[in-house]
Length: 80
Image (tube, rainbow, N blue to C red; front, side, top):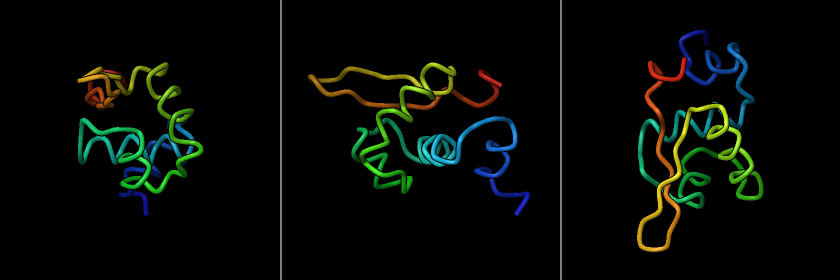
């Protein structure tokens, strides 16, 4: 289990939802909050709060495209 990227992120201070969302962003981005919720398993009711925390932490970016907010990860090497 120590090889699990979600567990590693939780160990350095991410919540489980933040870790799941970040790992999902690394796999596919940019995505909408709705897509990220489906990809990550984070409930839709929580995904925007989680994205806000990731953005504040410097782990994610919000991009505007055609009136839609898309989310992308900051490479781990940059924010760690």
